[in-house]
Length: 376
Ligand SMILES: *Cc1c(COP(=O)(O)O)cnc(C)c1O
Image (cartoon, rainbow, N blue to C red; front, side, top):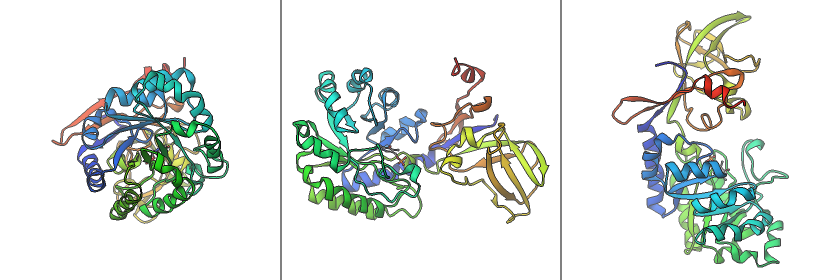
């Protein structure tokens, strides 16, 4: 198979989905896929067997869910455009606004297109243990969610009556203890409004399928919340936890150059295909490799673009790398293909799926036209 390609392994995806289904069975919580993190829709026939629907961040993700997932659709956006409301409202089951002003402007309009749509507002619990400020929705001056102070605007108007639910999203790759602490802040600030609600959405960022995540604790947190508010339907909307460790990015060595160190140039790009390795930043795992110097042969692995900083890092291998060797990046299913670009004209990786029966199917290939047609 021609590299580079992403390879989703269905049996790994199914393991994650079964873990999520276990939490649903134990608690009655509903779990949505956050399309922002994972949207490989050729795998949705499997995902939709286990999960309850999708959460979308605007018109395009909402349409994708409506077309390819066809279960519950919850749409939230930091700011909706008036021209999109009709289309979004007609296909969404929940519509979550980010601010009192958006709620005021668009909730009646949305209801006029879909009288049964359930309206919510995202609140900012102003508490987060997010490890990275870039990914902290509750950081200083955050635009994401309504603070308790701004929530006061709703109390002075009739607008509180329009709300069926509250939504918060405050976690990033975190354990259930972080959820417990956020919930405390959420209940302190907004708990008194929950009696009037029908549902509450705990957002994403729950790293449920990571080894060592305390699932039993999550179940007990949910159950204890339910015992306080038995009338509320609880939702979780993980993205990363669905795609976590379910597949790889398979690449090849194009050339090896020497400038003080050995540098292998790959037919991929950190900047274009694995942007979180640069902006999070994090170091991707590579199959059969170790840190620089730990194994016999160390290389700096770098992308095939002209960006000097397009570097994956320094890795060591038992045997010397040769031109044409495969280099396999682990855990490349989430926040990769949803973000990939054709920067510098680098081709997008193909997308392949290893089915449960072991057969591999290339479900998408990209060509020159995909590069050309985005530019005018
Ligand atoms: C990003 C996001 C998610 C998904 O987060 P993960 O970290 O991928 O689980 C869910 N809800 C909202 C509102 C988000 O912005």
